[in-house]
Image 1 (cartoon, rainbow, N blue to C red):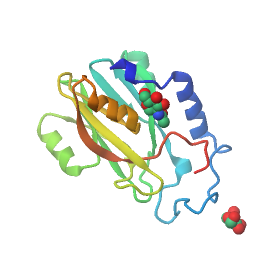
Image 2: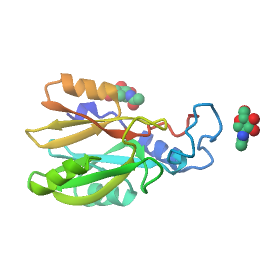
Image 3: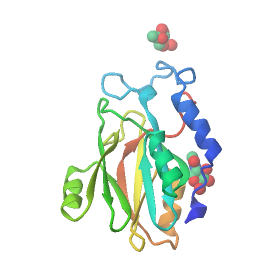
Length: 193
Ligand SMILES: *[C@@H]1O[C@H](CO)[C@@H](O)[C@H](O)[C@H]1NC(C)=O
Ligand SMILES: *[C@@H]1O[C@H](CO)[C@@H](O)[C@H](O)[C@H]1NC(C)=O
């Protein structure tokens, strides 16, 4: 499945730079479609949701460069880039994106569903806390974060890229559709929204 990951390290760094640079953040009053500050999280607070993998074994999504350092530096994960932009605290209209971890199958599962989280906890998954805060519906300029699952190697995969999503579903990698996991901000923090 490696060939479907096209985000390069350098473009990820550029995006990280844009995401963290207040000088380049879009003005809040640029267009009439700007999110309402009364009901939306502040997009300038959004941070990269990094993703990394051990090919054929596990995908891991996390905010914070500390996770990247540990997983890539110490645990042999390959850094793949930025999957989306998300919040690290609960901003207006956002909900927790729960992270569950299965040590036996080496699988990381993310969900906004408290019910799915409970089910997972009852069936051997460990509570890995809250990975991020995201929107439960398509509001505030957010985009769908699609979920896929590959049962042979027990891998959960999440992407906002519809081309990647469609290709994985149509391909021979055994990926099954898990629907929309939630709604996140896209990777374009430098462009006016
Ligand atoms: C927002 O945009 C409008 C229309 O361009 C402008 O008149 C107004 O001064 C702007 N407000 C702020 C706070 O920049
Ligand atoms: C989505 O993925 C495809 C296939 O990997 C790639 O060509 C395209 O540039 C990606 N689109 C975006 C917006 O990143």
